[in-house]
Image (spheres, rainbow, N blue to C red):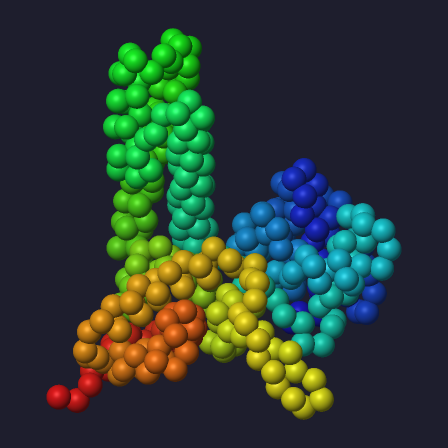
Length: 344
């Protein structure tokens, strides 16, 4: 790390920078975003530490472009180190102080490509939530009127249209209009999800790393993007080992160890719950097919043996763990995945 360390507390309209050099705080001042951008390109290279937040990836990219050693640090860790009340000055100072802790772990930032892929994925997830909520609400409201409709994604639109055309159900004009608007909104959500899926498939096709990841069992376009975003950054602050990445995603057992006795529990809760859920869903589909056919690869044989010993759910989590670790190796070493076939 450079001798000069700069802790940066980001906000919407102001940016607080704390400059530490020669074992002293040289300054702790407030700048506008425009002035801070100019400061980055007009000062000598330094180690600049940003507290991880919504705009930290952008500023990390700009700082790296200006020749600085830019890093991100956990906001939770900064809050532990901060000694006094929460102010911009105290936060910026705490960010600098955090870097002097032994074995401090920095957060890997995202590239512009990863941010764009994440935007597509998050927009799709939002549309799926809205679709499911709208669909359930329509079914529940019509059920209160003793009108039963098919609870199927493909048939719900036509079922609602049949209800609106039925003159015997005694719905008022205003109620029919409201249901019609809700039905049209649901159609828009269905169409939006199809467009998001198309955007994802085209984005994956344009990224060689994502295309490589899709060769893994249980990894489609969604999980390829998930793994590329979570593991695809080769800059400072990424995981050093595949098992660390798997533990962060939440596909490894939680340890309850003390006095030299190692005890492993369930996989527990995870901050990456959506990512973990999607990886396990993909792995579950692979496990379901593997137990119904004759093993063709060594991994099929491993899955079948694991299912016999521990069941399908444990096998799916174990496969998701293996998928994360294999993906980490592929992205960091630039290798290709090829299933190892059984000897004839």
